[in-house]
Every structure is written in C-alpha cells, then in structure tokens.
Amino acid sequence: MPDHPPAATAARRRASHTAFARARGLIPGGVNSPARAFGGVGGEPIFFREAQGQWLTDIDGNRYLDYIGSWGPMILGHRHPRVVAAIEAALARGTSYGAPTEAESRLAELIIAAVPSIEKVRMTSSGTEAAMSAVRLARGVTGRDKIVKFAGNYHGHGDSLLVAAGSSAATLGVPDSPGVTAGTARDTLVLEYNDPQELEDCFGREGDEIAAVLLEPVVGNMGLVRPEPEFLAAARRLTRSHGALLVFDEVMSGFRLALGGAQEILGVVPDLTILGKIVGGGLPLAAYGGRADVMDHVLPAGKVFQAGTLAGNPLAVAAGTATLEELAERPPYGQLERHGAALEAGFRAAAAAAGLPVWVARVGSMLTMFFQPGPEPVPVRGWKTASRSDKARYAAFFWAMIDRGVYLPCSQYEALFLSAALTDADIAATITAAHESLAG
Ligand SMILES: *Cc1c(COP(=O)(O)O)cnc(C)c1O
Image 1 (tube, rainbow, N blue to C red):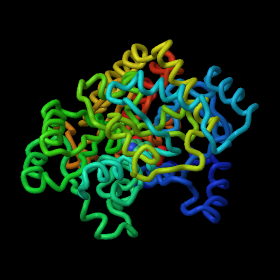
Image 2 (image 1 turned 180 degrees about the horizontal axis):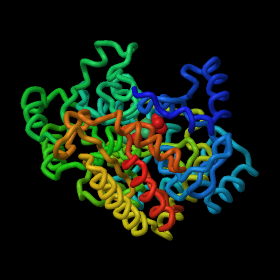
Image 3 (image 1 turned 135 degrees about the horizontal axis):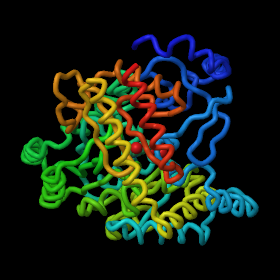
C-alpha cells in the first residue's frame, strides 16, 4: 500500500492514533471487524465518539459527512428521532426476555408487506447467521449438498460462504480463510457474476446436486456491480427447472434500493431472501424469509435447526420497526435517487477534469467509483473486471476526501451509501471536495 496519509494531516488524528495503539494490544488488529481496519487504503482507522444525522465526529473532534452509515443500516441518518424514541420506550420495558413478544409479529408484518417474495420470516442477530441459516434450510429442504455463489459476493463469514467473498477478504488479500476445511469449500461452487453461460454449464454438469444459488441481486461487496437481466433470468430459470432454490442476499440492498429491496425494482422473485443492516435500524438484527412452504421446514414448525438467545431482541426489534415504518410512511427513495444521480455526475466530472479513467457504477443510494488502469474505462461486470482497479489511486482519493471532511468507504471494493439526512448542500460540498481531491 502507498504511504498514506501524509504526516501533516495525520497530526489532526493524534487521539485516534493513541486509541488504535491501545486497541491493537487488546483486540486482534485493533478492530472487531476487518472492514474497519483501513487495510485497503493504508494508514490507521479513525476512532469515533458520536454521530448525528449525516455527521460523524472523531475522538480528535474532526467532523465528517458520513457516506458509510455503519456499512448500510443508517439510511435515515444517525439518531433519527423516531428510532431513538422507539429504542428508549423499549428500554424502559426491559432489554431481553428470551420469550416471544407481539413486537416481533409487528416487525414480521412490516417485512412481509414490504418484500414481494416473503411470506414467512425468521429473525436472527446478524446477516452472517441469516445467510448460514438460509443455506442450511436450502440443503435441508432439497436434500442436496452443493451451493453456487459468485466471486466477489459476500454472504457473511459462515464457513461454506467464505470462499471468494469480496471486499474484506479481497482487501486483505485472503480470498479464502484458513480454518475453512477443504471438505466444506468443495461443496461451494464459485462462478463469475453476470455470466449466464457459466451458470448454465454448471447446472448442466451437476444441476441435480445443487441445493441453492445465492447471490447479491445488486452487488455491494466488490464495489457496486449491477446485475444484467439475462443473468438474473438464467438464475431464476435454472434453479426452478433443476429443483434448486434461488436465494437473494439483500442484506445491503433490502429496504435501501426500494422498500421491497432489489427484487422490487428488478422484478425477479427469489425463493428465499436474506435481510440485515437496515432491518435492524442500527441495532443487531437480521432475518431470512421466503415461501411459506419452504420456511415451514424451520424448527419448530419443521426439522431444520436454527436458534438464537437474542434473536428478535426487543431493542433491535423496536429500532427496526421504527425504521421500516418511517421508510414506508415517508419514503426517501426519490431524494436518495436525486442525490445519488448528482453525486454520480459530480464524481464523473471530477475524474474527467483530472484525466483519470474511472467506471462509476450506481443504483439508487449505492455507488462506487472504480479507478481503472486505462487508457479507456471498461464496464465492471464482475470480480474479473472489478479486481483490475487501481487501489493506490483509490487510497489517495480516500485520504484526500478524509482531509476535506468526507468519510468514504476505506476500500475500493465497498460501495458508498447515502442517507436521507444528507442535504443538497452536503452533496454539492462533496462534489467540490472530489474535484479538489482528484486534481491534487
Ligand atoms: C453485511 C453483509 C452480510 C453479513 O451481515 P453481518 O450482519 O455483517 O453478519 C451478508 N451479506 C451481505 C450482502 C452483506 O452486505
């Protein structure tokens, strides 16, 4: 990695430097999740003390416009009054009972009403758990072992899914993890995204052994990659004709690209959907759901085991319910599209002014500017094209934006997320910062 950030501006983050040194002695790598470690941009992570609306404040007192939103959940911005009030009201009644509540059914109703393909839904504490559980369910229902995933798609860190898993893994240069057994990896078939022929060939060879095809219907975890209609159509057709399940991982895209997620705008109906991030409103909650006849195989309705001490936790359910109600009653999607389009055009213009070949990909409020080797930008369609990106250029851009008070993803292979708290003036200021950062 290049030598970023410059020493002069690093001096503004002394407290973060000290905090990181301490954390490194106590927590592996100083962080509780590798995506936060700044491995993809060099330098040290910034430690935060608070957030409000569209703003993050670090422990040195620097303020940043937040284009991460905790990697997706904070679509309403930080400390949205409705969400805060819901959490406070739940807190006053106790934090966990390990027994059912009516509030869980209310959240389930909201999810089922919003997401076209979901008839029944089970809640978990993390997207990782939800994805692992969906895979177990697909295997349990079909009686088959193999699953198909796509290079650069991330489905959490369950063993069978931690193969060619995108951003964190790619950034750290460990596409597969030690500790995942060869036997487990063998049941996971990894194909190239947006390649319907490869998928067709795969089903031709071993279609009767495949339990499920998992995919991000709009990919966020190798940077933003849009699905091509023929690819999604092939995935739907092949799974149906071979008796496999089509599983959409909408942990990022769910409630973000539309209230009904990517499946609403793409018009493709999966058998199962994995949700996380926004569905918990900033607290630990995720879910998986889909066809009632499939979901009724989950214990205790059926025999496929899955459980959680804190699953359906009252505080998380309150935060998620308030977030989904706000999104349904005052949909921010028009504003997010307008801001996303402005940012996309602004980033393109800034790169063109600097003579840099970039591919800017966007769907709604998710966006990635891929810095390319050039001379001409080529479309990023999957991991083969995404992984050609110029990570050093991205790192330089990232730190220049940090110095101008804009907090972007600390990896070329993560999408940025807009929140509804961002204003027209914030977007304009961000575009100005991008012009300065790329010219410099
Ligand atoms: C974040 C993410 C996950 C994992 O969710 P966690 O809550 O971090 O375990 C799974 N799939 C996708 C698409 C994600 O973006």
